[in-house]
Amino acid sequence: MIINSDLMAYLFIILSCIYFILLFLITVGISRLTSSDPGDELSISIIVAARNEESRIKSCLESLTQLNYPKDKFEVIVVDDQSTDNTAKLIGSYSANHPNWHLISIEKKSRQLRGKKNALQKGISMAKGDIIFTTDADCIVPPNWLSIMSGYFKSGVSMVLGYSPLINSNKIYFRLLQFDNLFSGIVAAATAKLGYPFTSVGRNLAYRRDAYEDVGGFLSLKKFKSGDDIHLTGRFRHTNNGKIDYCAQPGSFVKTQIPSTLSEVIQQQIRKNSKTFQLSGGSIIAMIILFLYYGILFIFPFILPNWLFVWLLFIACKFILEFIPLRKATILFDQKDLMPFIPLMQLIYPLYIILFSIIGTFQFYQWKK
Image (cartoon, rainbow, N blue to C red; front, side, top):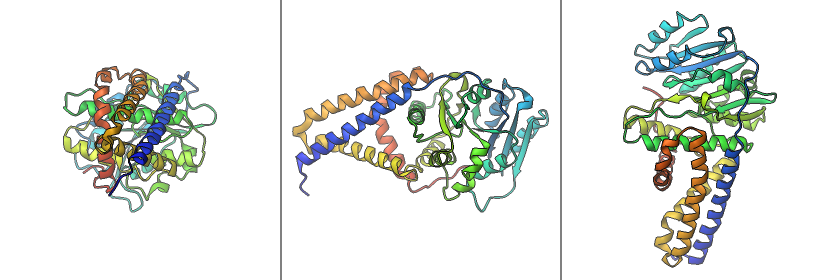
């Protein structure tokens, strides 16, 4: 097949310019992040779904006992999703000592909802609070989590997204996971502040219960195998059911443990990237443009060596324009220890994300055994 060199070169330049515009918009979105003063003491229900988390859930439960929020204004609902270990027993021991804690046990699989969505749906159906907060069993919530996040629920705001940094680890894959997590935070924060929230994380998420019910809750997402957080955010966005804001205050960051084995990492990344082509039309178009751009970027110098100077020039611009929001985000999200690794991650992360997006399309994963 004969490749028209001029056409390939012009396509590369056009896609590069589109990519640079996206980077500019992300930088604008990040710069719009603001703090919020504590608001009224809202009625809150915290929902935690757990399955076979005996080795990790204790830190989460202990952190929930340290919340600086009036006990009569919040409740903790932990849903044990058919655990075969001592998860339910651990939850029960904490619930027995806290009147505002509740344990819900799921005995069998749902025919309507798959994965964690069923557990979350059960928990929310029992909730009494006006605001739903969600986190995971392997997370540690900060003492001021509820007071800071609830301050963003101004009039017209139906959902608040939050950041969830990884707990430091000496695992060889930690820095790559840390960068991946930072990248997800950047995309969530920037797109939320630009008025089109693209993604979110269920480890640190809050929304009004009435808005959740208005969009159909998780029952409206039963066709999706995973992605309870992202698809629910998409439902809120699609129905224009109130504004979606982002909280980037360090006192609200919910820390999470990384998977303990490489096999778990691979499962997690496949599950996470399985939603790439299940998003909205605009989101899918943006992802296709990015994949096409990176595909041409990698093969360009081999196919068109005469254009090597142009390629190098655009590569330099790419690295500089990427580094600006990345550096700003490491400061905003208190991830400054990642900064020395950014240049390396700029090289390897595109291959990493493309690989797992392709594998994730086949959805060969499960939530928990």
